[in-house]
Image 1 (spheres, rainbow over the protein chains, first blue to last red):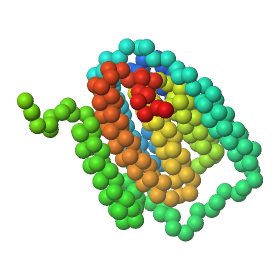
Image 2: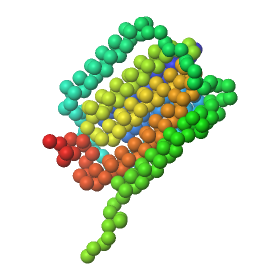
Image 3: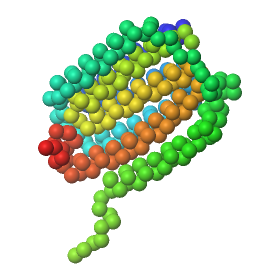
Amino acid sequence: MEKIFFFYFAFVIATTSVLVVAMRNPVYSALALLIMFFHVAGLYVTLHAEFLAAVQIIVYAGAILVLYLFVVMLLNLKQDDRYHRQWPMAAAVGVTLFVEAIILTVMKGWTAPLAATGTETTVGEAGNTEAIGDVLYSTYLFPFEVASLILLVAMIGAIVLAKKDLGEPTES
Amino acid sequence: MTVPLFYYLVLSGIVFLTGVMGVLLRRNIIIILLSVELMLNATNINFVAFSQYFHDVAGQVFVFFALTVAAAEVAVGLAIIVALYRAKSTINVDEFQLLKW
C-alpha cells in the first residue's frame, strides 16, 4: 500500500520536474513546479514528516511560487527563448552523474547500511511537530538564529537591488 | 517502512539531474532559478528519507534550514532579475556577457 503511494508520488514528481525544464512558457513551468511541490508534500506525509509537509505547502507553494508568478507576469516576456548551445557541457555533467548513479546502484549490496548511532532523537513519540521544535530550539538554536539573520540580509538585499534610485540626492 | 530507502535516493537523483539539465540548457533566467528550486527539493527529499530511515529528527531540521535559504535565494534572485530586466529589457542569459572574457 505504501509502495502504491510512493510510486504515484514519484511518477508525478519526476514527470512534472521534467515539464518544468521542458516547457516553453515560464508560467506553465511555474505551474508544473506547483504540482511538484504538492506531491513532494504528500511524499513527506508518507515519510511521517507532517510538519514539513505543511511548511512545504505554505512556504514553497504559497510564498515562493507566488513570487515567481508575480515576476513572470510583471516582466511580460515574449517566448523567444530556446535551449542553450551548451550541449557538450550538459552531456558531460549528465553522463558523469548517470554513471555515478549506476555505479552506486551496482555497489548497493556491498556496504551494510549504518545502524543509527548514539545521539539520535526518537521520532513519533510526542508528535512530529513537538519533536522538531524540541530539537530546533535546543540543539540547533544557534543555526536557527543564523537563519533569521540570513532572512534579514536577503530582505534588505532584495529591497536595495529592486528599488529604483530613490536614495540618490536630487542634483540639478 | 516498506518502501526501501534506495527508491527515495533514485527519485532524488532523477529530480536533481533534471535540475542540473535545466540550469545548463535553458536560456531563460527564470527557468534557471526554477531549476535551482528543483535541486533544493531533491536534497530535501533525501534529507527527509534519511531522517525517517535513521529515526533521527535532525534531518527534518536541516530541511527547515534549506527552506530558509531557498526563500532568501528566491527573494534576492528575483530582485536581481528585475534589476537586469530594467537594465537591458531582456532576461535571456546570453545577453549578459559583460564579465565574459
